Amino acid sequence: MSPSHNILDLGLSDFNETWELQKKLQTKRILNEIEDHLLLVEHPPVYTLGKNAPKEHLLYFVNDASVIQTDRGGNITFHGPGQLVGYPILDLNHYKRSITWYMRKLEQLIIDTLGDYGIIASRKKGLTGVWVKDKKIAALGVRISKWVTMHGFSINVNPNLEYYKSIIPCGIEEYGITSMENIMGNEVPSMCEIKSKVINLFSRNFASKKVNG
Image (cartoon, rainbow, N blue to C red; front, top):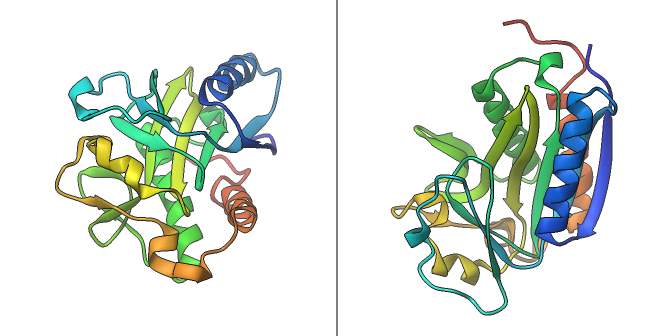
């Protein structure tokens, strides 16, 4: 049986500081010194590259956005205000030791969250993340050590999508990027409401019973 989840709402927080916190929590979770955690955060404008991301996917620099090489999987993406980022620190030994299973569970969490607001989102064959038709609304990238997770997912609530023009998001040129605000207009919920929704659905998607297999 898995432990309960501790929720940390970090508000607007620097990417590097949050990354260091994740690493400390992951180490403590591996040593079984703490319970599972979910960190929720918005970052100041930053482009992050996965460990194998081609640097040419950053097309040009934006003055107020930093660029950081990370140790997660995936390609290049953007984080900024108006985007909800979730960093689960989970011991998959208590769930299922499968990266594929974990990624699909994160995607389902996001699909369920958006569905509660009338947004029909789905997976796209051969690609990670969550999509509304041919536009990506949520990205995923994780790192797992001894089956304990870090990094995670991001959902575009109401970020400035202009930042995406300077990159090839996730290395995918043929599809666009969207946000809840683009779809819902003035009816887009507050970040506080979205966080509450994600927390509730996270607890449901990562229930305490161990998954067989």
